[in-house]
Image 1 (cartoon, rainbow, N blue to C red):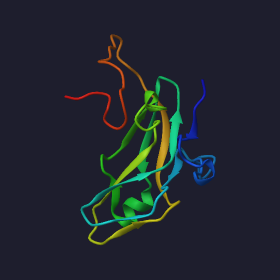
Image 2 (image 1 turned 45 degrees about the vertical axis):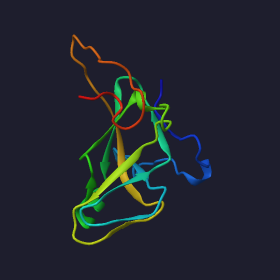
Image 3 (image 1 turned 45 degrees about the horizontal axis):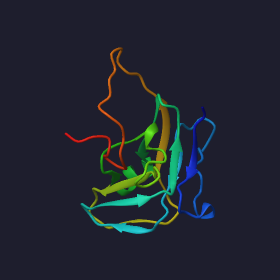
Image 4 (image 1 turned 180 degrees about the vertical axis):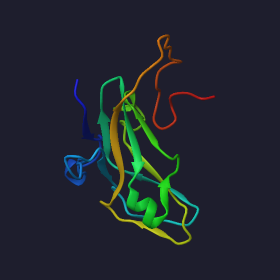
Length: 148
């Protein structure tokens, strides 16, 4: 199987840019916001990308904030780091769309422009225990793989 990004159902493919890496040595694929919006100090806002990621069952897409947003604009991902599991691709609730929740730690309003590079996605392999067991299957979108 291969890994790739694809436009989520319901979006005009011409309005969504597939992620690219900045250089041959860059690990991350730049993810762009499909919408424009302001984030007030202390506020968290979710920005859609219009993208989903296909990968092997033993892989994960790690989503991180772009360093320029964190350092220069005091923004971070609301959950610190995003984990996109292989079985999130094409899920029933949102077709597996990668959504980026950004929190403003600064003291002034932060503005995200439509098309701005807001995060990076890095594909990684992961390991499981020798006696690995799962609790079930995914039934929806963000936070849907189980409750505590």
